Image (cartoon, rainbow, N blue to C red; front, side, top):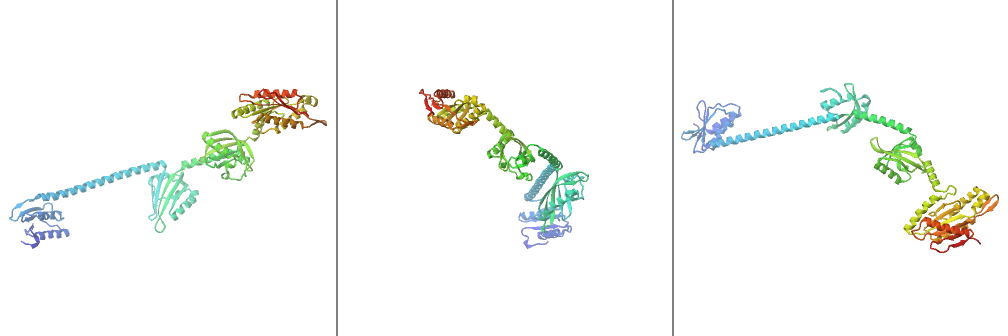
Length: 556
């Protein structure tokens, strides 16, 4: 039996087939050497001799063959006391503890394996779900993708891309360039060429000819990735079927062309104006060019709507009301041509969508002549056709308004009632035509001696009435006297005979706010009658306070 001084409290006995015994250190060394050499040591049992009941090293001795690939499942291990007594796994709780730790580690590793495996499966399930949804979205949008590896020359096609391009599922061995319509190939090449040089993105709409003979419109979008040498290494692109959209756009363009042809042939001017801040002109037909005196070679996008309106507030008000009401009819306002000449126009507006832009459709009618006739008709309805001053009805309408204003602001008001002396005899001797000329001239003289705010009207055959606003009784007398004197200076000629006429005038003023126009008219008529009885050619002030009339005669 071999002994080693450095073995400590234990020695190891290894029982071989030849029943030779080695010490502990030699046994471990042989086991290690055998393990390193991938040889198998054939042992029948393995015994540990214990001295002084210390067991820690014995456990190591037991575990050494177990952990070694040279150990066999049927090896026997015994623990021997120094006296030769044997006990199977003496102090076995140490071994149980170690084995328990090993089992715990194995269980933990198994749990971790199961956890990460399940997480991986869940992640794969999520990715599968995302992939399915992406495929559904691509199918709905009719979008497919493809990528090309320039280093290998291989091209990957998604199923959606094959479907967009009209290829069979799983088809390979073709190039995208071969599907491009010959008429569009040069344009597509130009769009993609810059991306191959700079590594950028590209976009292009073009036609493709599918293997089944069908022709489609697609939107091609892609990006080229460059390597270190600025050479293309990879290209990724998407193709979207836009055939329906393109056909709809083409149909809309045809409709727009037809509509433009109709608008160009319309006999009245038409403007289409974009509803933004400056209201730029999107379209104007030939009639509009002629109406506004515009050079027919001027592009529509150079026209400015502000040049068509005479007043800025009319333009902004028209477009504001149109956006609020969506439709306007017969909006009358002043427009102008490029030379600055203004004219009256009636505008009709409707909101519309013009080439995807919110716009206003405006038809214009030149109503300058209609406006003139309307104003003339209005003038005839309120004026005396012979003298041009207000007729009796219109005079009293204006007089009532001025009387109410005078009461509201407590202002004086004076009325003058004037009658041309002996005009009836003039008509009998010289004819009505000569008498009409006398009436016209008197209206001019009276109007020239009144202020712009005063009201003058013909209320009888040869009677005229004037209403002086914001004027006292004395001021009214001065005006009446000025008219009387000025009329005496007028000379008329008939068959070489010089003729002149005089006028009698009654003057009165309001005394309080309770008085009406009829009250003033009654007193002024009384003053006029008094002037007639006083010998004509005079001014009589008929006061409303009961005083006697004051006569101002023009006789020498």
